[in-house]
Image (cartoon, rainbow, N blue to C red; front, side):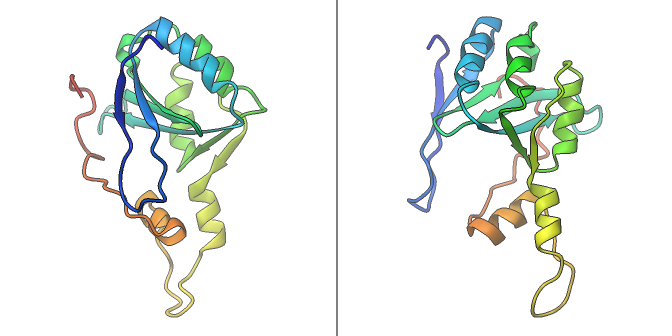
Amino acid sequence: MTSRQYSEFDSSPESQLKLPIYWVNSDEELEEYSERLGSFSELGVDCETTLYTQQMCLLQIACREFIVLIDPFEISNFSPLQMVLENPEITVIAHSASFEKRQLAKYDIDINAVYDTLKISRKLYKNDKHTGLKLKHSLGVVCKRILNMSMDKGEQTSDWSRRPL
């Protein structure tokens, strides 16, 4: 791989995956990683944007073996990734996938096979069994409810346009 390994996902509990994370900031690297991503049947996708203008500042894609962090400011040709994400044989997993679809559409990427964890959570978990109160469905809440994992969402409202990240 030509891109540098950015970091390694490493948090408790021990059962969580430790996946290498790669920073992709060139068309050549995007082509290289898109080819690798295209061999998986499921990909997790998450876009980070500016709060007010909704400009995509970071695209995160996870497969079973690694995670890529794509800097859209440095990419001029998204077509290799387009071929992967538009492949109906590859399921794109996202929380509130309509947001990711809107962001990716700005790069002429129309994801087809989508598994939206927000929609699934709303369908499966409407009300608390004990209180009858409506349940919340943010990504952090859903991860805690389903996987018993806490998520640090402290960077959620960060300025994703600043560099270096």
